[in-house]
Image 1 (cartoon, rainbow, N blue to C red):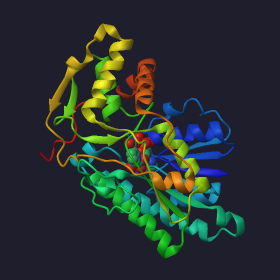
Image 2 (cartoon, rainbow, N blue to C red):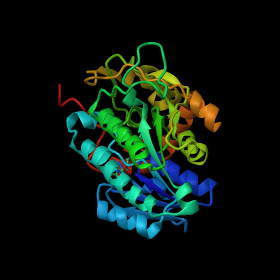
Image 3 (spheres, rainbow, N blue to C red):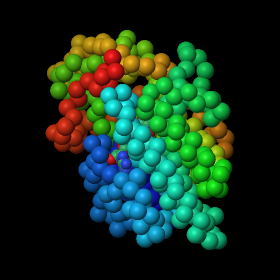
Length: 350
Ligand SMILES: NC(=O)c1ccc[n+]([C@@H]2O[C@H](COP(=O)([O-])OP(=O)(O)OC[C@H]3O[C@@H](n4cnc5c(N)ncnc54)[C@H](O)[C@@H]3O)[C@@H](O)[C@H]2O)c1
């Protein structure tokens, strides 16, 4: 098998590539534009493997994508390349429209042209697997879960652009027959996450003795999925998922943001008592405009039809993640030596 992974230098894409190299004999072509969120250091452990190739390219560059499909002849595409930070989509939506919608469309067109020319077994084997988010379903009240049949109701420019990309993928299946699968997952956490998202931002700022911003009162609930579990789920779906189907992927770990921040502080108190109590750094700040209250996933279809369930409990997964950021300060210090320095984003509309 040869897999195209788009966005493979990002947080989840790099976990998927490390997982494929470690657990299969497949070849991987990582197609990534290397935006601010792309970091090849996240792939240092496998970069020298002869089953891995990196290509710096934009998924919206149709001629470049066409040439790659023709030269490399993949068996599947795992499409993760995207603009992903809600706060950045509030400050400026253009890159979200361009990459998440136009880029996905361009990739679909190239995948379709390539797939139509395949024959026999290669044509039957080919999959275009699209990685999306539970944010397309909008916001839940205090109860209930998102199923694959929950109507789309995206609220942020980010989730609206991801919803559009999901619709395009489904349309290319229903109209053109392209063998696609869509996955909608909950919030991921784990090693190598760019420190603008809640968990790494909190860890990094706490390690530096800086204030820990919590939006609103920290009551927003997310269902946390360990990134290495997510990578394993992507492979299980690729091998056993049904064409044209959507699968929700969740960790079964619902937590309020404030409880996540407090748990990080408590773990740091245990391993870094010199900064304790880290909770003294918590500051409640202006809420994110349009902040969705609660996301929670019903992942029973994935369990029933693919036989996969997230194995990692949140407490153990979070402790391991904090330990990783403590042990790998060189990774995030290098990230923070660029343009982004953990400042507040996403308030330009307010
Ligand atoms: N992180 C999460 O919690 C989460 C949750 C649900 C869904 N998702 C989805 O999973 C996917 C991966 O998310 P992530 O957190 O790893 O994102 P990320 O921001 O860490 O990485 C995105 C990667 O895509 C690359 N990229 C951006 N635009 C590109 C373009 N035009 N062409 C080629 N490469 C481009 C970037 O360089 C980067 O390496 C996204 O599609 C996202 O919507 C993420």
